[in-house]
Length: 223
Image (cartoon, rainbow, N blue to C red; front, side, top):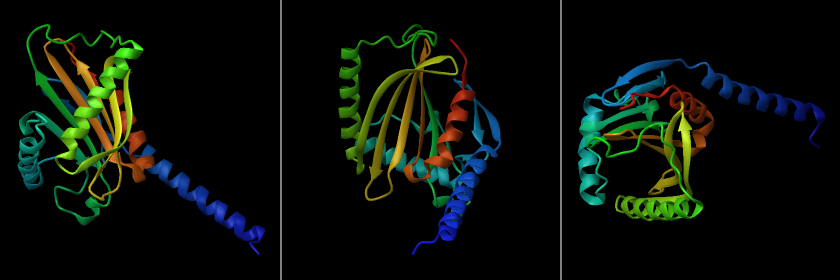
């Protein structure tokens, strides 16, 4: 039989494991980065700004992806933060997956709404826009062997008192683990900022609270 002693030992081990995972996330410090054409954001120290040979390889892949899927993402206007260890090709750096990607599209004066203007959408408009984005995203990602597992839709939100449109979904590259994605679109007069956070779903307890803190630190210079 499963004795009470074994039960309490198992329960204690589970509580220790939970406390450890929570404390590891809360104990991580952050570094503030100034992002050209945007403002600033704080990033957890268990992440690094993509650079070096790893960035060169990713840019080459991005060019291929853009040619196939026409995502319109230029390597020159992207700032990518990734889990630490990839620069040095440390094998431990590949044990998880986490990204904070910032991309700014420059336009003309008054081409976009103000940061202060909320996304005022009726239920019908929200549904129509969600379906449109779902179709576009599904078709584009399918060209690079990524499928949408679950579409959570769109929601007008406020990030650090700045209005944004949140698009969220669950995706999978080939047979790899699921990745949770949340993309935030900020209209800012003569430019639009896209801040995308993503992480392996199985590591959500580690990355989600850290990314919430990063988003709360986001300060966009109003135009």
